[in-house]
Image (cartoon, rainbow, N blue to C red; front, side, top):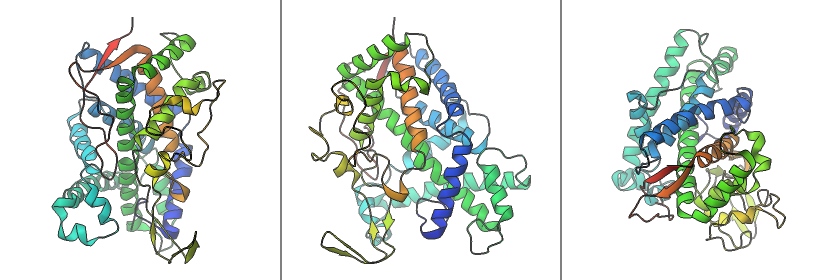
Length: 387
């Protein structure tokens, strides 16, 4: 199978290695990323100020911002405006694609007959329809770029076309027409697994700011004390803002966006802790259980950024075996650095300018709407300009 999410074996290894290498070359986790992120934050600030302190939903604006950041890295193209109609339609499909899969859908990963006999109950039918729509978008984009022999393509697209042109192995998913399909599949996987998950984590982060005002006050005090109200944040400021960074880590732990990690598969028979696991068995990491395991976390059901700080305020805990918000092993999220960079810059930039509150008369729900991913329930927030 093309792509990386449901691919395995040697082809998955080759695709993943290529993706990570070239995304790093294109600026993933580097200063050019800051430029892309700050461009989106400027637009988001304008959007927020149009509401003049009235309640707003962050869902759409965070989705478009995350998409634009990844779009510029992958295509080398210019960003979409936040009111672009094509973008809005694409965002609608992207943002509902994963949430459509409910608890039954998770069971269908292990019992495929559920999706065959109960496609509407599991959400698989609508998911497949939307997946085809998204794939058509990407295959059309790739074919347009291919008409120019890839010469006008930039970003991640360009080296991928070069790889296709150099591949002479008919068995490889980089080979000729298979390479074109693989490229479209990789792009789709990157956006579903990268853009949408980052946007949802941003939603959780700002929801938690409103739900836990004492934590928000500590974040704001640290930012305003260290950076003031007008300095433009960069990733170089991260070490100066230990509580703020601890807050982002607790967001990742507490939200547990991916309750179970990506599917793994045993390549040979394994004996593990008294259990026999035969070759070709699907294995998943129960991230939710680990991120809430009392072995690693004291009071795991409480939101406590301080758990990532030592008694003298130094960062701790992020390298423990219990901190796996980006999954584990060879299928750890390839966009991990992009996500961490985006979360930190969004948090500092917006809290520096606004106080975030719950809409009047509403109760912030911190329990997730569970499915394949843990989503926040629909909510509205108020952003009040700091004086």
